[in-house]
Amino acid sequence: MLAHTSGLPDYFQDKGKSGKSLEEELMHGNDQSWTFEQIIGRIKSMKPLFAPGSKNKAHYSDANFQILGNIIERITGETYKEACNGMIIKPLSLPNTYLYTDFTDKNPKPLFFKSNELVIPKAMTSFGPDGGIVSTSSDMLVFIEAFFTGKLFPQSIIAELQRWNRIFFPMQSGVGIHLFKLPWFFNPTGTIPYFIGHSGLSGALAFYSPEKNLFVAGTVNQVAHPDLSFRTMVKLAQIVLKKN
Image (cartoon, rainbow, N blue to C red; front, side):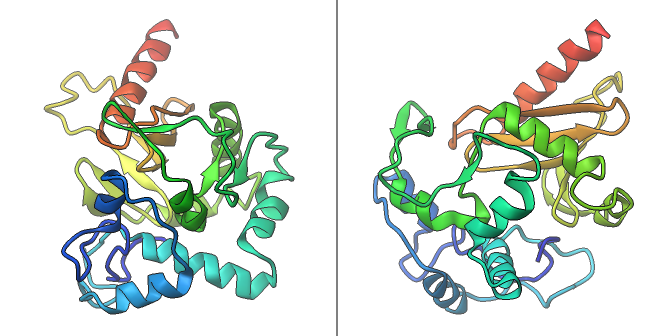
């Protein structure tokens, strides 16, 4: 599931029977909510992409995260929100991080689709384990540093997560993390290091450069241009590394 090698279709971005994806419906103003059971029903109606664990096969699917969230609830006997609070948010003292569950909550900064504000509070309450977390750049920095330095689990596990499959150019998917490494023709001088971490459709990302011991976290709150957050990360890294 975390490696996206399950072969399951993506309930959010892959097209359903209507010929449209949930993402397309939201981008065109049709805010809606859904349940875990509806997600399972949706992916059952879609064709699997490949057999689980097929060699050199990976397909990013939000369904994987939804299923893992449900597994967490079954194992812990807690809601996903309670599990996040108990295992991550409280231990790391993240004061501005929480799972979005109240569609009347106006605290998060708005997302944008191009120049239009994207109002999707119902959908935000449904994302849960596949993107329902609200946070700040400073809290994200605390989390990504803790993730890669052994404060959440033994640091030795990081090596096990780095089993890469091609997924989104130029990124590769590991187990719960992605590898962002520019090809030589975009990085001819080799001055831009590779990064490992994760990003989101909202324009948020949190990455770490093992080579430079550099952590980058933030968001552009723009869903129409997924490359914008990465271009911003590269520029920030260049500025920091030049100063150092």
